[in-house]
Image 1: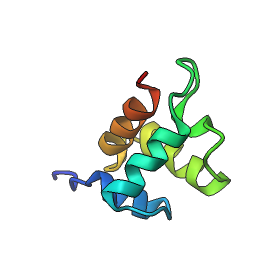
Image 2: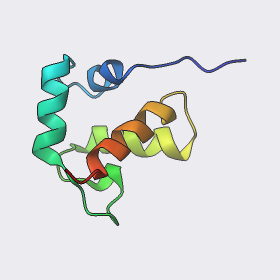
Image 3: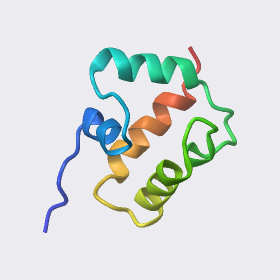
Length: 79
């Protein structure tokens, strides 16, 4: 069975954040870059529930894992 494909905006919605393109860009700019050694879920910008969701998505290779990896790359990218 194929996993559903989630879009970046859906991840932000799932995290309870504004999910329009401008808001997503502002969020990433405001909270990036993360230190190379910092896991995405440990970033100080997440509340406990958001961090747990991000951690579980990756640990369990959930259907959200691919888009969480995209967010991880975006937030670790040096400008």
